[in-house]
Length: 306
Length: 295
Image 1 (cartoon, each protein chain N blue to C red):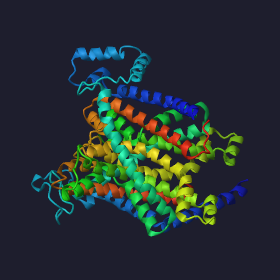
Image 2 (tube, each protein chain N blue to C red):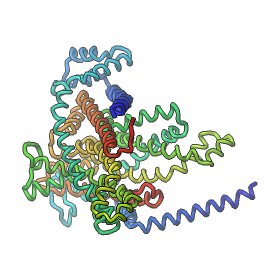
Image 3 (cartoon, rainbow over the protein chains, first blue to last red):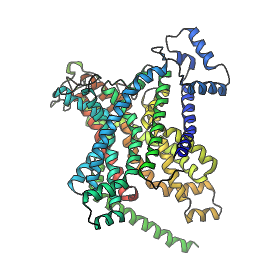
Image 4 (spheres, rainbow over the protein chains, first blue to last red):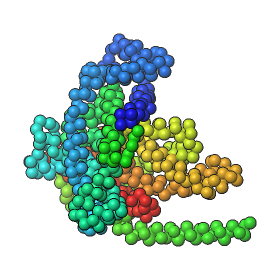
């Protein structure tokens, strides 16, 4: 297992290098002087010159990339052009909020999506099935930002039950996490349904039934256990979608996470922060996929990584 | 030789026609796909006949009528500048259709050739293209579009390019996977054996045989494109006012959520129905043409 973890970690290096290249060239694609862009609109000529020297912008491009990589390895992404704070501090301060929101949303999505998928699969082509599959399709097609606004209209404007945005109490997380959950629950429901239908048609399920086992035991212990791998894969993959959705959900609900930070930074053309948030998003996505790969080994003993 | 190939070619044509008829009949029986098709048809008619359905300018302000609730004169109410929301939703369909077509075009134009080349040649070419794809896939599609917008800037053209590029890795992976299996088929080997050039093999033998998954992905991609472009518009990073774009309309309606919720309600509904149409049609096409991938 350890060998697999090390191998899997090493396999992320080319992707990390790819991300670093993307971030490096991102600034160079913008018309104008990258030093000026990084320093911001209000910077003095001395500050701009200082940044140019720090980044080695007067040196060959591969030297610049080398400097960029060494700074990246130390998580040194410069300072925000708006606040002058180190970028990593800005990102770090908001990261927990996004993680809390993402975890709450994925938990809610699993709590609804997996049972809905199981019910659909065990009662295919009944009105239960049509109801849940239709809800799943609606979830995929619905703009998350619109759903968020409609929930605000219903629960904040009309009913006055929940706050429309911000943070402070447990009530503040309900609407954003439901909105974000709706974004991914559809995929989880559909995948659970598909893999459960397949598992329920396998010989081991027939054998379990022919032994006279209770249907509940057949579904949970035999079918669901075998259907879990694709479900976990899709939950892991949806995490990426969730990060994309977090950008919108955090904007709708004024939730102070890194999703909102990236939007504010793009609007203010604060490139060091844009680079930092994109890097963190990429790293988070890679880490989640790595984690999902490792869970496989625990769920399915047939998988022998070494 | 000609005499022997002609009946064969005719027979192939006839079998293709009957296959098409069978698929069409299956598609018509699929109620969800039919509903999706109807939604797309309404959407297309609205976009094409926007100026007939709503004569007058959708962007001309009329401040006396600002934030009016739905009425007979303005069935969907008016926005903060007194413009008819119905008119802007109708004209917005034109903008979103343009975006959907543009986005899919960019995805196809870049993704399909790269996927074909990567799957067909393999080796270093495949390795290089796949590592770039891996990097692009390391970002959720919408974040990639955001990153590109931050570099390219806002506006219709840049929205199309950014969202389109964010779809490229999906097309590369899809087409590469299909190419890997098609290139092992006997007819491709036969074409190689008689010395057919690679370009001809790719265009005449492999591409037509990977068209089904591409068609399905294109339908789903149009829905995704509308959704992503609307999301950029909502954040103020997409199409800019006064162009009537559904996402941007929703974004500006957010400020009036407490007093005039209708401003944000109807553009969102339009996005939802258009995306639902493409998703239902895409799912239906997949069920009929490629049931292996049915979920």
